[in-house]
Length: 279
Image 1 (tube, one colour):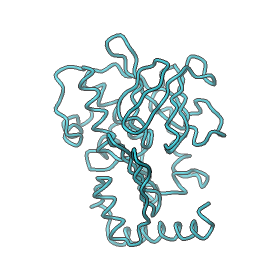
Image 2 (spheres, rainbow, N blue to C red; image 1 turned 45 degrees about the horizontal axis):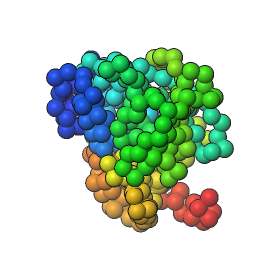
Image 3 (cartoon, one colour; image 1 turned 180 degrees about the vertical axis):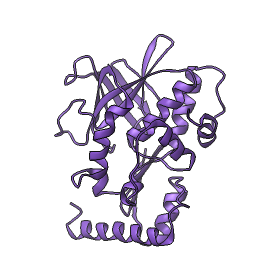
Image 4 (cartoon, rainbow, N blue to C red; image 1 turned 120 degrees about the horizontal axis):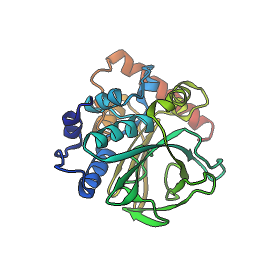
């Protein structure tokens, strides 16, 4: 059993009387606005699991995670509230050159509601603000325009294409239902391999109605309709204030020595990146 009331309190959403479209939209918006896409525990040396109960408990404590945590928890919440939720094996393409397909580095969700299926994804790093129908077309949400189309690479699957200013290019997902536990091995790889982007770069992201806030290392960006605002964070105090204030992260369980070590590692990585010409 998950802590539904605690989860809804974090989202600031009252328990819906029935699994309606209006409630689903409110829950999705609240999750991407209030629960950060983040990988701090990897950089703190604190391994996490992806069981829904564990991920919900993390969210209730004021933390977030990446797709396996965020969508795993959200699917459990929606199921507890009476929604018809399916988990799908998916793959994210970071650049146009990446191979398309549902390789399993992403967990996608669909919900069947009122005779139609919807892509419901709160773990796409600054992606959707609201659900999208599984219908071919172009969809605008705030400053971003997305596309949905049948996947060419995955028979029977679908392809979500991000706005060009997003953190990734596209996401394909397969039609067959899967269990959350099937992503366990990929989670270990993504959270421990030196080749993993999650291991290489600390990040936190939140999607609002009017844009996305993105922290990568020491660089904070705000992507909005007018463009992108960027600044480099030069002090530990400012950096931790951003994590708490912009990204709503509760780090009260991180003691002073751990905070100092984390900031040192992030700042050192930033300086090496700068010295390499930001490559």
